Image (cartoon, rainbow, N blue to C red):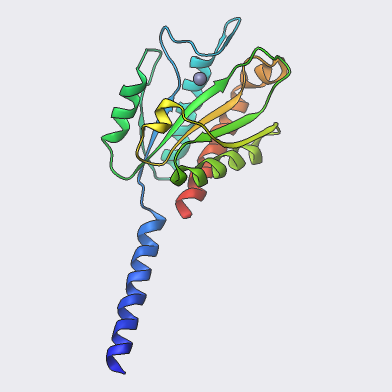
Amino acid sequence: MISILRSFIVVAAAVLFVGSARADYFRTVVIDPGHGGHDKGGQWGLVYEKHLALDTAARLEGELKKRGYRTVMTRRSDYFISLPERVRITEKYRNAIFVSVHYNYTWKRDVSGLETFYTSAKSRALASYVQSGMLRKVRAVNRGAKFARYYVIRNNSCPAILVECGFVSNPAERARMKSAWWRQALAEGIADGIDRFRKG
Ligand code: ZN
């Protein structure tokens, strides 16, 4: 009887330990502003994706720091950084997640909305929390959390997502993303999603 009780206590302690370890198993968020330098990304007139992504990523960094996360930026200003280098930076950190920030572009001007991509199964929940986090902050078309094999999320071994914060090619969305309010709201929405993922 005592040995059964003892093994029950051991199992209960193990469950508690695993439970708490799982709740904060990542400490670092690697934030990856898409494009940079000669790689402008999506572009309409003087509105460049690379600038929007960097500003939104910097706002996300501020928001995450406020919430106690350790953050790493793959670039801090307007210079080119290759996709393999973005992955190499991330792989230096244990217990990290990776969030690539982009703005979208298509030749169909009427297409708009937000979408979040993941490749691995372990990134799927992160993608859907971030997608719903953004949509709680702004009114936009929900294009969903979706599977895709983009280089930076396919090659990262940690939970890794790529967030598309609206279409540069859509006139209404372009007008909104030019305002700091939109970029700040999306940064907060992404941070909310990361928080929810962390709490599991
Ligand atoms: Zn992009």
